[in-house]
Length: 73
Image 1: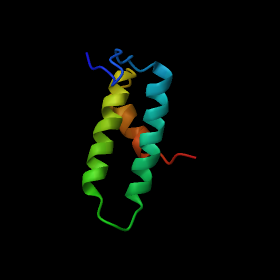
Image 2: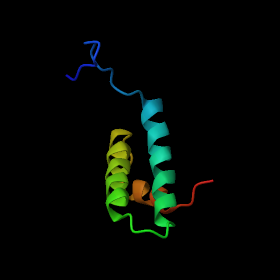
Image 3: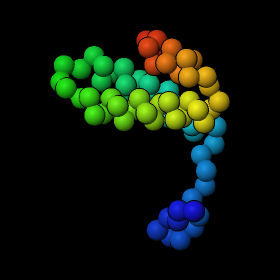
């Protein structure tokens, strides 16, 4: 178990925190997809994080891919 600098245990993320990060990462990924610079490494890292967060939320892989490819408001 990882510990903070104050030596207290790190709490696991709540479902709400995971969902919020999932949506935020999808928005960041979509912004990077429309950027004019080459950001392949960032996109790959975000894509991996999104798929992992989706797995943590119990989403099917095809649903995660659909979420990634659907424009967010």
